[in-house]
Amino acid sequence: MAEKTVYLDHAATTPLKKEVLDEMMPFLTINYGNPSSVYSAGRTSKNAIEDARERVAKAINANINEIFFTSGGTESDNWAIRGAAYANKDKGKHIITSLIEHHAVLNTCRQLEKEGFEVTYLAPDEFGIIHEKLVEDAIRKDTILISIMFANNEIGTIQPIEGIGKIAKEKGIIFHTDAVQAIGNIPVDIKELYVDLLSISGHKFYGPKGVGVLYVKKGTKLQNYILGGAQERNKRAGTENVAGIAGIGKAIELASERLEDYEKHTRMLRDKTIEYIINNIPYVKLNGTIEKRLPGNVNIAFQFIEAESAIIMLDCKGIAASSGSACASGSLDPSHVLLAIGLPHEIAHGSLRFSFGEENTVEDIDWFLGVLKEVMIKLRTMSPLYNSLMKNQ
Image (cartoon, rainbow, N blue to C red; front, side, top):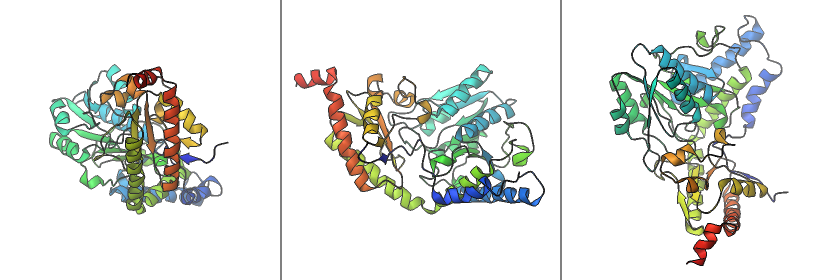
């Protein structure tokens, strides 16, 4: 039995807040009407959906009729990219994205390549930044879509979305950003970003799993992704997840209200962690940049260890951490993000991600850092490469 438990994987998912659950519960129990029904029970559900739509729109400074509910970030990414590609294929078949996107974007683009589209995958610099000039230089006459993530889920790098958006707007190209890691962690204002499509996932900011949002700027040409009934103004068929939608509406409202304090708190824990590791554990490297980084993200390459072994040992001590994207767990391949920023395979395999949330305390982090140092010492004593290095010093 672990001495205590400390959850440090908020980039993978966050716990559901009690206020959010309270908002959801009536629609899981007594208010079970189908929102497409015209009688009072149906109208109650429909009103809950529209209330949530208003909350989401307010949180990102969008118009209500630009908010569409989905099953999560993956569906939102798929819909944005496939929907924009096929709706605008008469103008061209060229898409621009980056090598460090979430697999929901990368695999969608790879599928589109099999269907006759051409995709340019931009490489980041050593800190994980996709520079505006790189995007601009990749644009062709037949470019119809640019998709660059707002903030990276593994190394926390925040991209120059406003600048890329300006370029896309000037060229008349649709611009999509996967903002799944940004919402709830940093300010996101649609009116300042020149974004046409933006993906959101509820469980990244203390909301429920299985519900997300696609922001679609008015006038953006987008093909429907799920066919069937007339839900979501004839754009996204299927009986709505009323409880989940009510939950994401409450969660994003709460996230907006506490954003400044949350950002300050998680940044403090982030900086404390980075400083300790750099100063107390040798042979380490911070992945990504410190200046343009999500406040609660730490990604460190530890030489002479395997990340999987470290995660298991930390778990035995009650600490939940990860080696990168939760959607890539189970893969033996090193992170595509870390390889894209130039890390060799052996260093990428030894990288760990710690991501903080509001329930983490300074005491938690002090304890965790002590455990982490012990784990690294133990793992390195089992490393032939490390032992050889020590003998030759």
